[in-house]
Length: 335
Image (cartoon, rainbow, N blue to C red; front, side):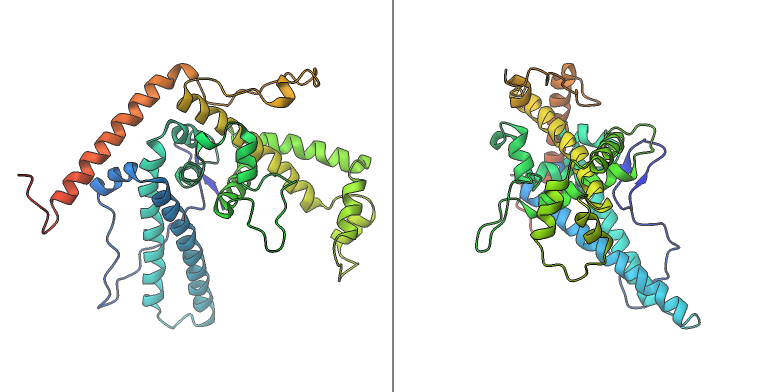
């Protein structure tokens, strides 16, 4: 579940719920917390190191949720049976999850594009870091390259024996981002959640009008249906898309707009120029498609300021890391 920080206006992805601190059982040592120097040094991580931490975060998040469920089930089944050890390990998962987020925040903040993403309601340090760690703007001259790499191109198929044409980890990050937009649609500072709401209304209208009959027929004949009484089958049989499909189409529309804006921001900050215009806008074959929606919270005039700030923060991180390594036992003398 995604919640919103009332003080900053930004949301955090699936934060660990606050819980009464469990008593530490005798003989068990708690997890060490990330010190300030290491947290600041995280700004100098490489993309593949950040990818590792993002994957580790979601792994521990699933473990924390599973452990919490098991602890609650044990409470219900045996309310008089003590289980301090289970509470202890649940707390350790929660602590480690928070420490990973703390390490990812300076990495995301070290990039102007990461700072922009964290200014968007529904996107925090984990999703920002996951996007930065996977997307190389030098290999994406247009946003279509990012859409395809993130698994958002509906024409891209994965045949048997073929290499997957998209990045599975980035696709997961994008799905979670789209889900955050949906959950934050009622926030006062929301942007992409409102895009989802508007697109869903349009998709419902098109569906009721019968615009998706061909797609529904294709889905109906392209699968082996075991349950012909399910609401999904009945929707396709009537020439319409089921509610879940409408929801995903609207969510993907909002996500692709976000990725388009992310590409614009990353391109401007990296190349110091505007990205190429989309074909549908630049081509004379589409004279009515001239509208361009500017990325929210983005002022190109601040480009140089953000670059200087990011460079300064990166240098601070390098100094902190060097200091930490020098303090370790067996470290070589600076002389």
